Every structure is written in structure tokens, then in C-alpha cells.
Image (cartoon, rainbow, N blue to C red):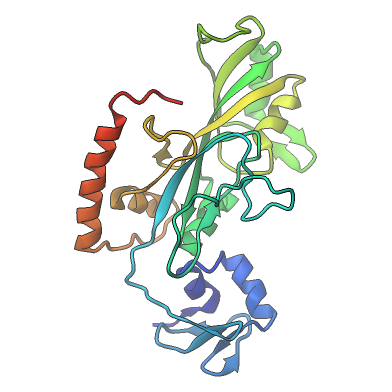
Length: 278
């Protein structure tokens, strides 16, 4: 069965559909000896070349998704002209395709970052039309009152349009916080991922964000045993939950993948013992 060319290439991790549409328009892709054009369709057994290199389309491979605990100080790009560490530096190498970051976190934000080899999954999880929820813990310096919270949940006009949080919940101050009187933690949820949106929303109210950590993305939560700069691979059930969250047909996992998942879950339980949340 034929598929749109950009969608077929996205499933093997070459990039998002939007990025691959640009490759096709630029004449970088050919199918069965003819330069492809936008709107072309292809099948898995067609001879597809990208920049003259053959691309093997294997549709029965299980898509991979990684969960990474990003520390502050890393940038969310593959390379950095200033030589700063990137979130891609420690990821496992792939025999084909590439890791695609699902959204970004700025250099001063820590927490959950997802990576996948499945371009269409990445594209949908980031697209605002699917309204995938992102949850953050944020520490605010400055006075926060009920009127401010009401404005943040009803909608605030930013330079790129109206933005809002779905929920804002105050958390109890931590006993070891050095500035309990002037810093307070909040748990916030929003359903889009504009650049620095959480920070800009709070700053629009005249307060300062001095700590920000993402703790969940869609159905995936960052567990306590994944320490800063560590990653783990999501199990088949978690991967399927991501596909369902964006109305994609869930993949079928091989028996080998399931057995690997059982082994890794046992290892996770062992690692979780005695590991404080960082």
C-alpha cells in the first residue's frame, strides 16, 4: 500500500514530515530513478534515494522512544557553535535513522525530554492541534495572588498571541529552600510548546522564574530513579500510549522487544531502591 513519500520517510526517523517536505521540494529525494516532487506516494519496496543514498524502508521495526532527564546547562540542538554540551551527546548510537527530539527545553530548564526514531510520532506530539499536555514544576520569585493565577489560566496576550496555562497549583514551600519567604513552587500544565512559553507567561505578570523543570509530556512522567543526564528506553506499553495520545495506529512489538522490556523493568526496580528524586 502506497503512502505519501514524506510520511514514509518520517517513519524511519529521517526527520519530521515538514522537514522532509522541504527535502522533496529541493530535489533531494528520488523514487525508482525519478526525482520526487511534493505529493508523490511510494511503497516500501520502491527504490528510494536521499541525496543519492538508498533508504531502506522497514515498517515492521519497533519504533524507539527514549526518556532523558535533562540538566540545566545543556542545549537542545545536535551541535552548538559555542561548544556547549547538547542533549544529544550521550544518546545511544543508531545503525540507521536518527534520534528526533520531541520539543525542546531551553538551556536553563531541566527535566523530561523525549527522543524517538519515528518522525510522524514526533511531528504529532509537537503539533499544537493535538494539544499534548506538558507539566512543569516552576519556582517563582515574587508575590503571586489569586488574581494573577486567574489571568494566567484565562489567557494572557504575549508577542506571539494569546497563551494560558490549563492549571496552576501552588505547592508547599520546601523546608530546605533558602528563600522560603520570597520563592514559591507551582505546578503548571499547558497544551502547547512555544519558545520559553512558561517563563514568558509568568514574566508577563511581573514575577521571576528562577527554577523550571518539566515533569511530564503527554502520558509519560519522569520517574524518580532517572537521575540528571541519564536516559532510559520506554517500554512497549509506554510507546503505545504515546501513539494513542496523538491518534496514530499503535505499533506491534516483537516477542524479543517484550522480553527485553520485562528484563529492563526488573532493572528499573532495582535501580529505584535508595535513589532520591533529583
